[in-house]
Image (tube, rainbow, N blue to C red; front, side, top):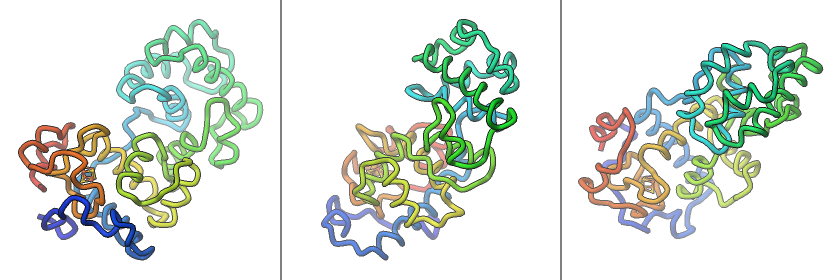
Length: 257
Ligand code: SF4
């Protein structure tokens, strides 16, 4: 068992945060400990969208709205091959784009956004993806979440990606009471070291997809159970919990438990 992995689980409901008795410094230490433990649990955490340059990541992230990264990765090879530059999107035929991205859902508005995005990149940014948050959010279909994904993963600039998994997880971990994504982002930014923001986002999202599921979290084998005020939201029996763990890291995760 690693140095940052809890030695034993707490009783459900016994964590100070669950009783509203956690100090600010206690919450900061706990958040950073969770980050370190998740780093050991998911040493390979990364953006699960396939891309090889900033434009590809921007396009893939726009397509990922309301669908899975796996589904997006199925359509992007053909899309990227047909439209390799912002100019290509700017001049694309809407129906042809729609056909290529149809299976990602909301394909009409997504195709419109991709063409508009290409036109705006050409008109305002010389055909290149800008790096500034305030520039990125002027692009069609691009909000703060997408902007942070691109900045963090294509440009190496730290950013917190507040998607649905992230929102659910930080609520369950009682790291913030905020519910608005921008307020959540600022609250977590105050707890986690800036240089860790991008990786913390990936680790939390990996944890939400593989262990801390929305309906039945695998509490009994959870590596951050000791630091989780919601321990007991899912089965605490290790055998029952181990069946709930998914993903290619399953053996590694169960080995840590
Ligand atoms: S799996 Fe259970 S113990 Fe782990 S973070 Fe989720 S709710 Fe907390």
